[in-house]
Length: 136
Picture (cartoon, rainbow, N blue to C red):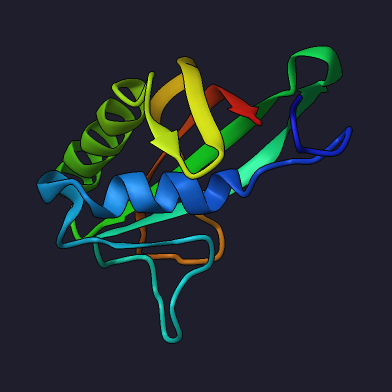
C-alpha cells in the first residue's frame, strides 16, 4: 500500500536539481531554485521552478510542470546549457530518487530565447517540461 498521503507532492525541484548537478555538461553552472546573492543574469545558471501540475490520487503520481530558466554569459552559452539541461531531464525516465520514481518526462515548451526584465544584461532561455513522478 502506498505510504504517501493524498495530494502529497514530492520535492520535484530537489529531484531536478540533483539530476542536473550530476551531469558534467552542467557542472560549471549554478543550479538551484533561486538565484545566488549578487546574481545579474550573466553567469552560467539553471534556475528550477515548479509551475504547477496535477496529482493523480489513485495512481499516486504527481505530474508537475517544471520550468528551467537558463542563463549564460553569451547567448550561445546559454543555449548550449539549456539544451544540456533539457536533455538531462528528458533522459531521466526510469530514474528512482528515494521513494520517487520518474515514469515519464515530456517537453511542453522547448528552449526559447526570452528577454529578462529583471537582469538587463542577461542571456536567458526558458523551457518547460512535464514529469510524471510516482511516490510510494
